[in-house]
Image (cartoon, rainbow, N blue to C red; front, side, top):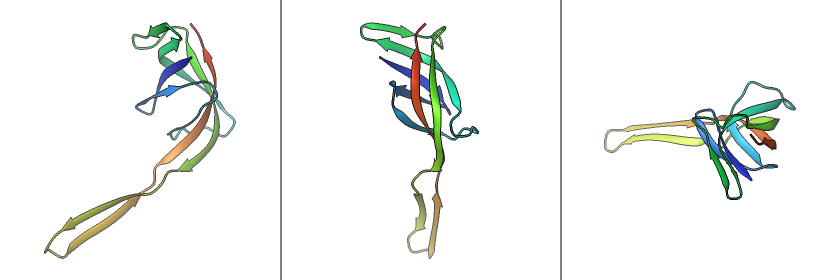
Length: 103
């Protein structure tokens, strides 16, 4: 069984027991989160929500917070003596999917 959830403007396909890195949420480690379900599939039985599947939720536990790998941004103009470098590390929240509740 799997479900499609939405958080942080992105959609994720999740199964029970999976660890997932999502956009940072202002919650402490050990907190329980509930995500609305966009699509729920259990074998041949598939339920598609408009926009959410009624009565279905995905529960997850916050494991930790952190920052992702550095992304390097380089701007360069040839023959103009111009070069600019920047870096960015995105904050994330790591969650573990504990339960997918059916409708």
